[in-house]
Length: 292
Image (cartoon, rainbow, N blue to C red; front, side, top):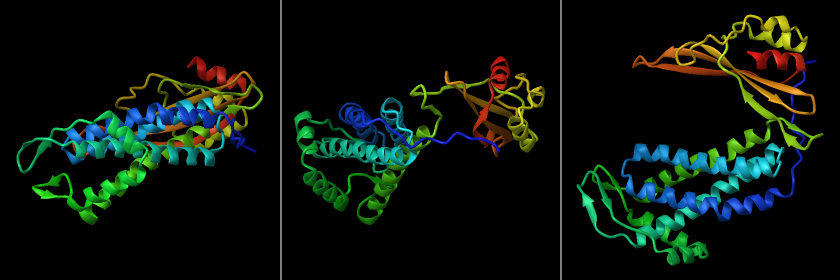
């Protein structure tokens, strides 16, 4: 039977300390930067990608500090850690953004697009952070009257709640899902350490995926002879092999097929098909792949 890696579900209690560290250091800084970006970039389409980036950076902090250093290999726990991280980071963002609203000054631009000059007052933000009821009260007031608009119409009320809800889903969704994936990566219980993750250069596209999996299962190394790295990963269909190595002696492999096609503008785009994830391989196959 094919053997795949499964996380043990264990974790180190130290993850709590690491979570507190990123909550006190990284999240306030990310919230500050995000609030200023949203305030001074009056383009809703760009703000969408900024929101995605904010969620990604929150998840990155969780992955690198909380999950990795806290040795969390429990996907459900990682999901909840990311969920609460997203909420904490958003709360810091809201505290800063509300202070920008409070200190708003002159506005410049036209009815269609403009910017209002504002800067935070540090002690005022600090005070808001420790008064959640006041933060939510200001949020309600902002929702009632609005602070920005689309095509000359001020956005407020139910429509603004919907936009904020979408923002919440994006940030918390990204900050939850990425740590969930991170915690599923191979971890050696015998050495108490994460496996070394090695992404190999682009190799030939895998046409017969089922046969390749069968070759891995039966330790048929000749099935990998066709692979070569003379592939243009910028334009050609190819495969990406990610090797997970450990001093414990076990090795795992993930394979992702990238199918190339042209979009409506004639640009190359790739469709990803990760058809095998964390499958156990022997040391000889690991050596063969590393040499490629």
